[in-house]
Amino acid sequence: MLNIALPKGRLGEKVYEMFEKAGYDCPSIHEKNRKLIFENKEKDICFFWVKPSDVNIYVERGAADIGVAGKDILLEYEPDVYELVDLDIGKCMMAEAARNGYIDQIQRTKRVATKFENIARNYYASIGRDIDIIHLNGSIELAPILGLSDVIVDIVETGTTLKENDLAVVEKIVDISARLIANKSSYEFKKAQINAIADALREQTEQRKEKA
Image: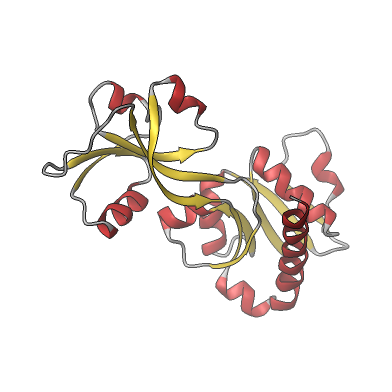
């Protein structure tokens, strides 16, 4: 049986719709209950819901054969997995943002508030900028407003929250979208089954892009 880790929430629901459309359905997943694991023994698949930031852990450690994780999670935690398909959903971007009118003082260390420490370090190292990272877990936008940091590095979807707090994007760091990932060992032993799913999801993604 192929174990598939899906991220809880709206993204996971969209992802499951793609699996369902590809013929990998599990009717019990639509039942109103608090179950986390759903099996379709006829099709040898088992879905389970996990926190989005944990999908990569389940896949890397083999509890799941495949799963769907955001590119932000893959860049931040750098799990040892195969990235098979860009599903082109859950799209947003990782960006540097600051208060409107902010001017970077190159001669001093930039204070960066973020929960994506690895992404921030790699980005600023790539442009040779000295930084002081301030790790925050929530309400990142408050940091520059209250003078805790000069800028923030965070996920930006619509930009509404930034605008409402007198902040703006200074620099786009990387585009983010959902990716189908696979455990390396599972891929070797279940290659045909995993590739069939990957091909079906890739076809849907390409069709969606053509219609756009």
